[in-house]
Image 1 (cartoon, rainbow, N blue to C red):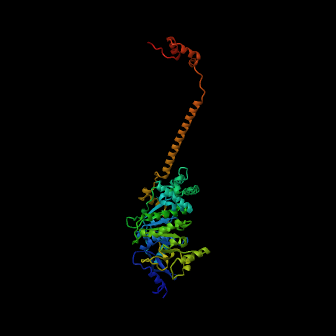
Image 2: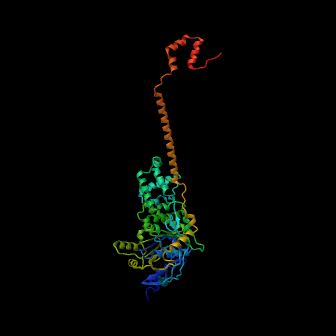
Image 3: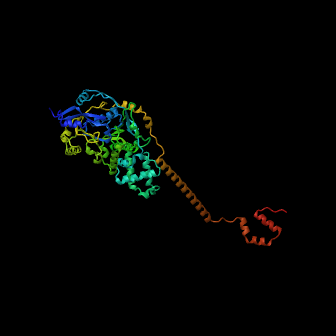
Length: 526
């Protein structure tokens, strides 16, 4: 009797570790001793999907198909799913797959009753770039830590950005889009605004310049489209379809795949926003949402200590909110150890060992697995496409035995849907009218601009008044220093000695009449 059919064989011991009694996702059939055993199914308990997971493997080993397979079964089980579609080949989950000989062969090998099926889907895009319902965030909700990550600021600059956000909150200056943030930074280093932060450390002109230049570069990448209103309500990802299946939310990222820092950080915002909004629920019979974070290594590249701490805390605590997170990347070493320790479910596709660095990564990956009946170093380099080494958490929360597995084939289309079908799906969504058109209401930029305009007008008025007063003083001074005019003939006569003598000596009526006629007054009549 071969090892694979012996009741006491390692194959039976491994399969027994996956004999769950409750609802579970069917991943595939056990591989042992070079054979695929369709009667020994490898599964993952549905309640354990909120304990997070990792799908890893070299390019071309089938990671995308694996997440598609898991997403389909989650949707069928009434669990909403979020997928980041970076390469543009996940949209096919909305359409039934096309039967062919390869699928039929795979189904027969793993004991799968394959039927073509599409799943209810919504398609989103970052800020409306590319096909999809626009997903936007305000700068305020994005926060200084995530913004520092995407602007590639150092620790000191990140702390300064935190002060800027604090000031804006305290003063009621809404940071909606990037021009709002730019306006606040510029104001705080202006003559008018320098004193505002003196009590809490201030903002140096050099740091402000770095932030403003980083914002300019960020805007040149098209990032202005991602920040604004209406801000997307991440609660939309928790919906189910009318037939009870979970809605599959596909974030279409091909149009921004050359901006990895941006979309990876934006995905982290989505996760952090869900964490902030959702109540504590503990362990559920099924998760509220399972979030697939593709190309996860991009999230951690160049990350600050504060950013890594934020991710670790979010992953650790969001489980109690009913959210499961799967990171999809090339090797486990792409994920920091503190985050990796939170990932209880593992699907490891083949790894390559062509270089010394590859060999080192292979050894590191083997060490992340529990003790195994397999020679994992040899196994991981020999797996075919659509095969993986799996260990998950049992219904009791304990790790299952390591199982080499030939995975099932997805039931939906393994490739993108046509552009016309995608566009029609987007515009027919009930959410399209809610989020499609951007809104630009009064915020920090408008308020600061209005205050500066008022200050400039007041300064101009004060300057005009000062100039008028100056001119008036100069006119008065000029009048006092001007030469006196020559006296008139009448003044000369009155001032003469002859007149004074005559006035004293003549007291007669004739004298008075002469006097009055000289001053031009009227003759008094009796």
